[in-house]
Length: 114
Image (cartoon, rainbow, N blue to C red; front, side):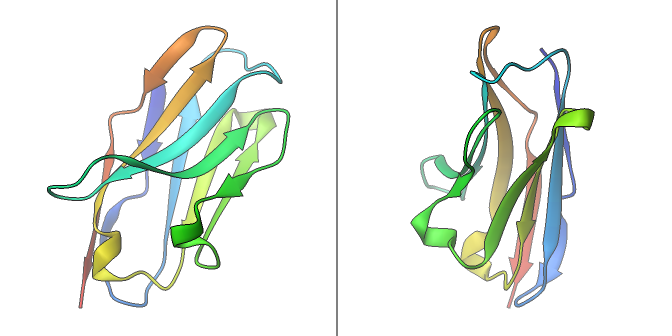
C-alpha cells in the first residue's frame, strides 16, 4: 500500500490549505483512512477519521475549521484547513488502516506564521 500526500506549505495565520492523500489499490468499506498531525515536541494526534464506508469525523480541536472528505473514484482523501493558526503547525500524515494492514504516508509539512 502506498500513500502519497501533498498540499502542505507555509501560510500566514488565518489562511487556508488543502491536503490530499491518494492511496494505492482497492479500498473496502471496512477500511479507514485518517489524517494525523504531529507538532514539534508533541505526540501525534488524529485530526480526522475517514471510514471508507461510513461517516467522516474531525477532532473536537479542529471542529469548525477543518473539513475532511473523500473521493472514492480517485482513492483520495482530503483535509481542508481554514482559519489556520500557528498552533496548527506540524507534520500532517495520512494513514490507511484496513484489510491490507496499517500504512502511513510520508508526511507533509504545514507551517503557519503569525
